Amino acid sequence: MFLRTLGGPELVGAGFAREKPLLLLAYLAVEGRRPRRHLAELFWPRARDPLNSLAVALAQLRPLGVVAEEGGYVEARVELDLPLLHRALREGAYEEALGLYTGVFLEKIYLQLPEELEEWVWRKREEVARRVARGLKRAALGLAALGFLEEAEGLLERARGLPGLPAPLRTPALPKVLLPEGVRKAFFRLLLSGECPDAEALALFRASGLVDAKGRPLLRPPLGLEAQGVALELAREKPLPEAAFFYRIARPLLGGADLKRAVEAVLSEARPLLYQNPRRAWEILQEAPEAPEVRLLKARALERLGRFREALALLEELPEEGEAGVLKGVILFRLGRKAEAWHLLGRAGEASGEALNLRGHLLLGEGRFLEAAEAFARAAVRFLALGEEERHAGALGNRALALAEGGSPPEEVEEAFRQALEAAQGPLARARILLNLGVYRERLGAMEEAERLYREAMDLAEEGGSLEVLGRAWNNLGALYHRKGEREKAESAYRKALFLAREAGEVLLTAAILANLAELRGERAFLEEAIALLREAGHEALAARYEKRFSAPPASG
Picture (cartoon, rainbow, N blue to C red):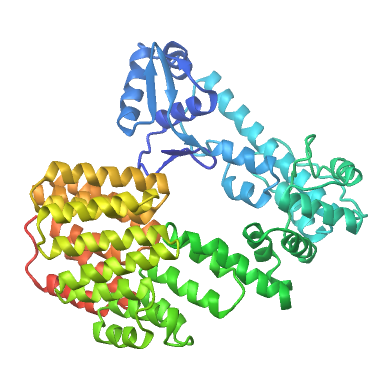
């Protein structure tokens, strides 16, 4: 839980609005662990039984999981906005600080408070406001020294209008003389890379309030032309894996050899994320220079996110052969346009692991399970030869699934899953295979084993940092509870899955979970939203299948 005290108090997402318990929670979050008797006497000094009044307030907070009691002491179990504000001020992130300071401390407490408690609220309110004002003044002086005079004046004006100050703010005169160009560039080098070999420049930074005693930057100014030039110098110096960050900042200045190397650097940064965190890969590629290789990788990221219509549009300007042709075939298959996918596969050939993997999926869709298993086995070999270990394990997992769908003997299916898990080195590869294995065990009636596998997959997904895989695990668990008739557990699991799928930007998974919720609750609105989402992303065939579910009588609720 997150407690907002600035402009609050508000327990974000809880829908809890009782002032006295929220004030108690805020006090504990700010001041730390306190004895029960101290709290009772501070908050209810005139009550007949202060400890009983405290017990009532804690009873209201306890179901939210935001307080803990032990040995006569009480403590808060919430995240707080004040540490975030203090960090932003400390680092000179003045826009972030102003975004957090949405109002004075505990602004919406309207109760008549005991004198000592009221004094604490006002003292803390003024303390926070003064701290923000000091941070803004320091940032304004630093901006002026770096040449951002207009921004500095604007920041001082915002500081003067800061709510919560006990007296009008006295603002300093801004310096008229800028730091020398070489010193300004040295500061941007320090800010961007942590490097500053110039001791004289460091001394000037300290005198201007730009760094602390340890030489750490105290300001995050706009990254204008000077900063971009420094970023380009750093990008040229750094090895490729480290250079991408600097090239993204220097993007307006790129050309010639710099542009070519920038593309290589961004691709090297984004590629490893495609199968672990495609949303992050997409974000990185959004800032990449335009190039055919970047366009292809953008399409791959969108395909991983289920945004097939956008992915297809990016591929239109690329030749329908080789890697781009196979990827287009994969997208057409995922859109239900199987004949077109077969045609593109024929043109592109089956020389790559991805092409063989696509062939396996197409055969699987036609019910040709043994042929599909063979194609997946060949794909696994190709991926292994290229050192793509995660895709190698994924193809082996697909083979195990094909054998299971084809009704192969259980010992053969189990051995196939064992081989896939043995090949899966990373947590996410293992998690995906465990999800399929869980579905297989569930079909065999081994519900407890399936649940264990889904939960193991969840742990691995958290370790690997994949919202998408974690969402799939919760969806599978929700479906298991749904089939067992455990409706409350199923809805809770589906809700968690839905949150994760939306956070990950996973269109297909989001739609599947909405459809599951529609079936569980008998509410067609969920299914309508799923269909609209699919149509927007270009999943016409799947949307049509969902519409058939929509036209059927609703499930009993």
